[in-house]
Image 1 (cartoon, helix red, strand yellow):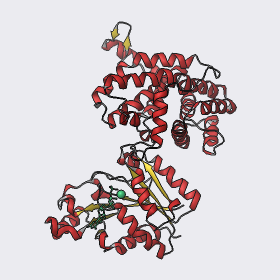
Image 2: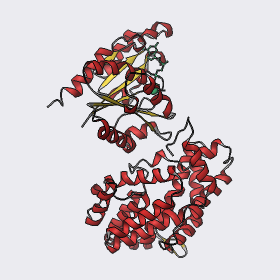
Image 3: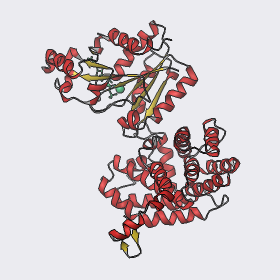
Image 4: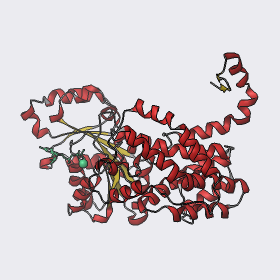
Amino acid sequence: MRMSAGGICTKAEAMNGFASRDLLADGGAMLTMLQLADSALPIGRHAHALGLERMLRDGRVPDAERLREVVVSALIQGCARGDGAAAALAHDAQRSGTEARLISVDERLDCLKLTAPAQTASRRCGRRLAALVPRLCDNSLLNTYAAAVLAERTPGHLAVITAATAAACGISRRSTVLMEVRGVATMILSAAVRLDVLPAAASQAMLAGLAPDILKASELALSSSLEDMDCSAVAAIEIAAMRHAQDHGRLFAT
Amino acid sequence: MAVRIGIGGPVGCGKTRLVERLLPIFQGEGVSVAVITNDLVTLEDSERVRRSGLIDPERVLGVESGACPHTAIREDPSVNIEAVEYLEARFAPDLIMIESGGDNLAATFSSELVDWWAFVIDVAAGDDIPRKRGLGVLRADLLIVNKIDLACHVDADLDRIRADVARARPDRPSLFTNLRDNDGVRGVFDEIARGTLFGRAA
Ligand SMILES: Nc1nc2c(ncn2[C@@H]2O[C@H](COP(=O)(O)OP(=O)(O)OP(=O)(O)O)[C@@H](O)[C@H]2O)c(=O)[nH]1
Ligand SMILES: [Mg+2]
């Protein structure tokens, strides 16, 4: 259902909105975006919890309110000038048609991943998406870049290859960044559900309530230049991730 | 490329013990092997196999499944595929055994991950398991009914299990084992050889 200015639109408006012309114009891009954002995309995202498990063990996430704070800081202090900005810049790079620009965004992001676990998780998921790219999208620059990732000629961070794929499939820069930033929230929330921090329905309510924060982080990301990109300032999460890497009995890879 | 075989089954059914029992047989047959274990508590199973003295510890990799054991072998096997590719590049083994995390009766392996897979059940966990028609029991290339030595202690009726298994898997092989006393393992090796090694020898 589409939203009109006044709220949910009438049935007649909805019918007009779904005229086949509209569908042909951006339906394909929309389908790709849904696919890239879907948890069914087999790139091993389920194996990562961004340090949440360790924070939980240390008693740092006692309730839903604290979890919400963790997500918000991961969005604003962590993702916006990191993966989010990288997604925006990688989208530009893919559109500009130069592999070198994609690689420079990727390398910049690589320097900003402070901890080995954060760096490894992002690279590994990125590599797995790169392996999938030829089956998703027929674009020569994208395929060249994916091959460079697989050949380890570039670090291959997930945000960069995702945004390049999105751009190649006609997804707008804004949508690409929104998808990237939202992905951080859903990754933490889905891990939280599996770790029994909060129930599934409550996590969806929390995700809906996080919309303003997701939008705010996306705005920051969209206005960032390569020089503005910055490492995560979410010390608690980064430290937890580092300590997690040394844990013996753990559920998540990172 | 290595032959990839999966070993699945509920928690504690004897998957790791089966790996440990098969390793000397593969060695005796000149089949070079590598092992991947999937676990919620990864270091547990991979460390156990590494320390077993039955295999070069470097050939054993532990994969963490993020509390989703079935996801890591079915919906999203990418992490396991990556582990397979690493082992292939490093050791070029003839065969890779992939032990899944202990899971429920519905767990199955993706054909994108393995060429052949066995599902292990434990008679002491209930002699009605074959009748529950879990996908693992129905679809596995080989069903292994393990811990038959315990049947008498838990009043499990082996004849009934045999009949139920035959009904659940009319055209697929099943074997009964006692891995504690190394009973029936040769038959498992023969099934693996029949199902994978010979078929791919060319
Ligand atoms: N009596 C008896 N014990 C067995 C047999 N097979 C395995 N066990 C024991 O059962 C226990 C569990 O065996 P594992 O091989 O660790 O089981 P698993 O399926 O790998 O367990 P998870 O990886 O935790 O799911 C161990 O104590 C084994 O020694 C058997 O045939 N008979
Ligand atoms: Mg085991």
